[in-house]
Image 1 (cartoon, rainbow, N blue to C red):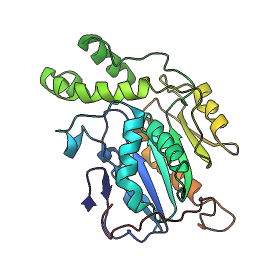
Image 2: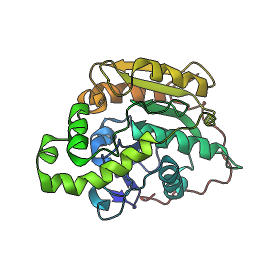
Image 3: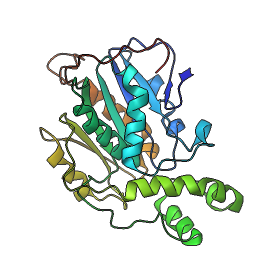
Amino acid sequence: MTSTDWLIRGPGRTEARLRLFLFPFAGGGASIYRGWAEAAPGDVEVIRVQPPGRENRAAEPALDSVEALAKGFIGAALPAMDRPFALFGHSLGSMVAFRAAALLRERPQGARLCRVFVSGARPPHLPDPEPIHGLPDPVFREALRARGGTPDAILDDAGMFSFFAPTLRRDLRAAETWFDPDAPAPGVPLVVLNGRGDRVVKAEPAAAWARYAPTEPGLHEFDGGHFFVQARGAEVREAVFAELARGPGPRDYSACRSATGIPSASPGGG
């Protein structure tokens, strides 16, 4: 396995025909997508995104805006965009993936982006109805508990909670303040993933992503709440890999934008 600050790549697939970048949810790190690389088709390389403030980057302060997260990712990932690729994120990760896709569209040579998967997230023209990042610690802790996703071992241990809370707050600030009624679209097909029991993102916000897609977005619904991406991980992976294989021919990735001038990837790195 190799890694840069932002990217964690598994061995043996640096010449895959398509790359899939995975963005974690607020407070989560690249490890939440452990197992995706092993489950991927042989012509897909899975690259896990590791923002600052978590796991092996815990000593760094987390970024507190979607814009900063998207630009940081692009700066690190451009060398790995020398072939077709797709972006998948959950919750905050969806927002970062979507914004990164729009920023890549603005580049003169574009990028060979095939699809953007937005999972468990509201689109940018809808403000967050229940922000929690600024709540006092006791209320913040219980709000996290109600949402799920944060282990009780962290919530119930004062020392652990004080260690993780700053990153959680900065991540949630990024997600909850992401609001842009005029946000540009990425110009590629979107696939929306939704939890039927999600109390953070309801079905209506999931359907509202359609305004940013050139064609009707794909929609996949799963049993579970906001963190269905973990509870139904195998089903989510299956849906994502099936979407990536769609096209006029098997795995031809013809939906990707053309790219010229994107630098070649370094073997084994990113």
